Image (cartoon, rainbow, N blue to C red; front, side):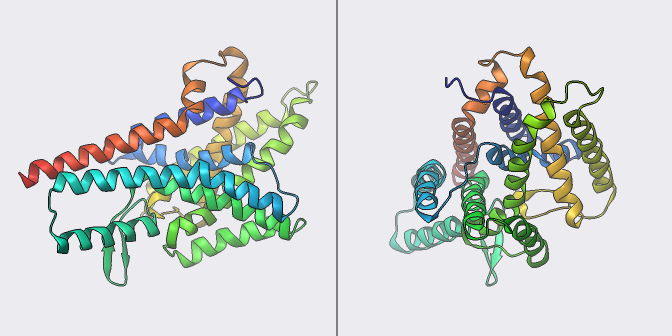
Length: 308
């Protein structure tokens, strides 16, 4: 275990990955909506907390190579494993079926959506939770590119990206539109990282700025969630490209993520660096992979028994 790891961030990611697993195993209801109100944006915010800016395009290219290995390659490997598994279980090896199957899977891979989408009047099947990996890939690299290109105006472009996502509601290839939505959350993580040291120096204040942000963000997230549940608008769910009540849904997800990270920061001194939650956070990619394979295996076996 690296000594420079941020235990509180590992704890937050550990809670997030466990909530993701729970959210995929419970039925619809306010409990599921509560989890979905922030659990995936949380990972974008956490990613921003550890992000390093590129100073020029050569550094950006190196960052792109590293992100490709860490995010896109695992997504592709998992997708190919499940594609082969599905094909073998369905047991139809004729040429016509194989061609249609390959084209359908290729369409699913390119659109990389967490839910089924309609493209030119044809339904394209989702790839499940793997949508998160290319979305995070694009969020980090696009934000880094904006910083290299316009170092003094990149934050204005982040707001523009959110506006485009909410206005157009397009399903772009490789979850690019979800990456645009994720840009804002990564930016929030960067904002939090830059201010935490200053907040923690306010020892003489009765209520430090960090505590105020924790309390304020938590209250806003809870009230926004209650309002969301009372409205007729679909609940916040990034995988389905449902962002709740206009910008309120994005703000709710951001505040929920902020409050959890700051709460974990407060609790960090009371837990072990190798505790359960921190360990889950450090191996969140492994847990995501196992969970994805388990979900797909269950779905494939259901298809197998129906086919039998």
